[in-house]
Image: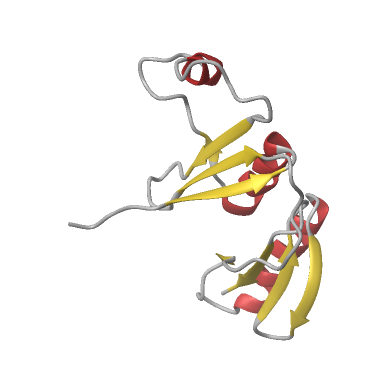
Length: 137
């Protein structure tokens, strides 16, 4: 049996970070699970929230291929380097380096930050909250 994985980002601003990753991956908002019509209804079904419980946002791949992404607001800041990072792949067809650079620029304009460029191979970036990822073929 093959299992699927979801990826969860602890963050300070869930909606903002989800918006960045929509641009990065072409994902869309995930609707709340049935029978709920809103995320607020779904969250209320768990009872009283904890005092430090923040908001959240959920995305999914519209083609159903990639993992679901969850963004959960937490009170503590990010303090160290990621132990896991994502690679945003632009595809290997044709000459990929111009597409890598174009995607990195698109993500910089969306709030990302270029950390390092490895000419002809990949660009290491950080999302608006400092989570590192690579743009590659």
